[in-house]
Image 1 (cartoon, rainbow, N blue to C red):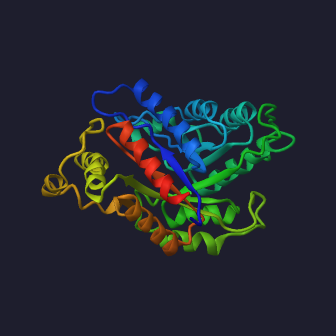
Image 2: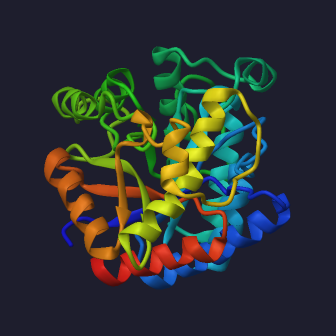
Amino acid sequence: MSVPLSILDLVSISEGETARQAIAASVRGARLADELGYHRLWFAEHHNTDNLAASATALLISAAAAATERIRVGSGGVMLPNHAPLMVAEQYGTLANMHGDRIDLGLGRAPGTDMMTAQALNRSSAEPQAFAQSIFDLQGWFGPEGQAHSVPIRSAVSAGTEVPIWVLGSTVNGASIAGQLGLPFSVASHFAPDQLDEAIAVYRNSFTTEAPTAQIEKPYVMAGVNVMVAPTDAEAEREFTVLEQMFLDIQRGQRRRLQPPVDPAELAAQGGRDQAMLRIKAVGAPETAVHQLQELVERTGADELILTTYAYDSAVRERSLRLLAEHWF
């Protein structure tokens, strides 16, 4: 197909499973994605969640990069307000030195958690101007001299690594920041679809190569999609109820690990199938899912799609990756 497919992994923890088992399954999935031809594998950052083990993003990236050979591995993303920018430069510079030029650094302004936890994590400002300055400093630390632009601090471990930086966002605000900085934009349409088309338009219209942070010559959009591929449409719809139950739990303030799939009709009776936040999806047999992905590419003009797949059984997730790869690559 015309655009590459990538993977966003939140390292979900199923009921009865430990974080250790979830991380091991994630590494197995990384190896499989590498073999199947997926373009990149990103890990998201979340905190104070019972059903996700994606908290120490740089460590997960290192484990996945060590287990793979070709696929790009990175953050989707580092929630920059939770971190000191210098520490981010040192961590991702170290990753690039360990694993070569396969490392990406996606940055977001959201905390990736509740406000109480965000306060406990807070290390830098989420304000647009401060966010932009942090990116400019990070580029300096990744640059040939390893020197920040705003402070006389050098980072030997990140110097010369030139780690690519992405801006993540779910609204026109994040899109505008990405465009004005001249950086690639990853839009979180897999859970925030309302401003998808508008955000992409704002990004492209605001894009400039004149900013000192600019790293690419033309706009580049990667859109997030919820995916579940199975041998039949009916089986895929049933497996997709795992994610639908997770979002229903969030709405109800219920903290549970991933639950087994249920009868879609049963979940619909509970109001769990009409989830507007999950409407950017490709769910079905391979031909169905491919068609839905093609429609999204045609609608948005996305240069790349990044897919997130939740499954109670990691074997179901791996089967989904295989089936889609067989019909896309």
